Image (cartoon, rainbow, N blue to C red):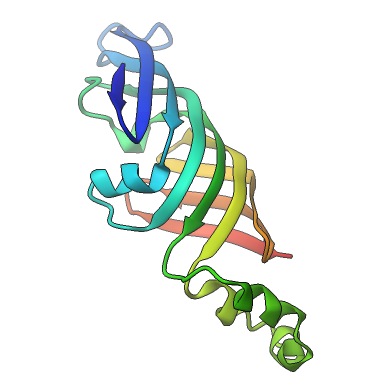
Length: 176
């Protein structure tokens, strides 16, 4: 268990021989965890990722395993699943305000919307009511087919994958 003002991380696990492979295979680390978030933005900032999110409380729960030490995660060989449920936050680069929502309703913005130009809504950030979904980990990739972000300005649906080793994404996004 790790506790800090921004979050509490609780995990239990094992480190031993993988029963599905030969005895010459490296030991396998496996854990079940819950990350209870009080302020996800503050946690990401503490972890050195900068101010990318404001607020956001909820949880990440799941199970992960990989060959080798619990202290050296092997992202290329990691397997597992994570459930995401976060409420009331904002992806930053934007100042909050009613003008963003009003631009959606403005008839002056209609030509821009018909050409699928939504930069004024999202280029500076996105406030969300919730982010929910499931992520599967395997073959060095994190994939989802049901990640949903709901906010006052839009609902964003995502499916696709991210390569954990190369740090690349192949995502399909629908904005409603």
